[in-house]
Image 1 (cartoon, one colour):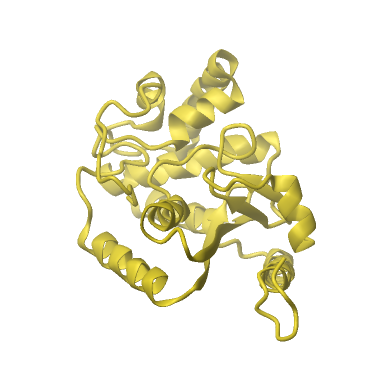
Image 2: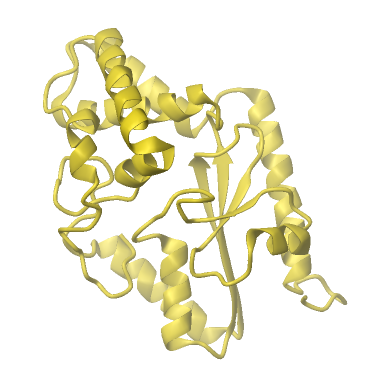
Length: 256
C-alpha cells in the first residue's frame, strides 16, 4: 500500500462497515449459484441505500482494520513496497523528466481503455483528452472513477511534490476495462472479487467450485476474448503515442 506519510488509519473508510457482511463471508463456498444469488440481492439493497458512488466508495476505497476483508491495506509497508519506493525515489532523483505509466485491468468500459489520472493532478480530464488526443481520460475521484488510498500513481505525485518539485513529471494509469460499465459489469465484478477472497481464506466444497472461482477471477482481469485483446493493444498504442508526443519524447517535437 503506497501511502506516502506511512499512516495506516484504522478508522479510514467507515462506510466499509456498512457493507462488510456482504463483501466478506467467513465460510466455505458450498454453492456458487446460491452464494451469488444472495450476494446480488444484498448488493441491490446496498445500491438502493447508498447509490452507486456510495457503494463504490465503501467497497473499493480500501480499509485497514479487517485483515481478511476486501482491499485490506495492511498495517505497515511490505518489503517489496519499500523496495519499489526506493527505486522510484532513485528515478526521480536521477532524471529531470519522468514519465510513469501504471498498467491495470478491471474497471471501466470493456472495449475502451481509460487513462486514470491521479486526483492530485491539477489538469482536467477534458484537457488531457485534447492534449493526448485520446478519447477517455478520468480522474481517480468518486465523480469520474472511484477514490483510491495508497495508490501508486498518487504516491509518485506526492513524492514529486514533497521531494522533487523542480523536476518535470507526468504519471497515469492505463485501466483496461474487462466487464464494462453496464449494470452487469458493475454487479458481476464485485461478485468475482468476493468469491476469490472468500475462496482464498476459506476454500470451497469441491475442486469443481474451486476451478470455477479461479477461472472467473482470471477472466475478470485477463479476458480470453481475442477481440478484447486486439482492442486493448490498439488503445494502448494510441495512448502511448499521444502521451509521448505531448510530453516531448519524440525527436524534434517540443513538449506541450
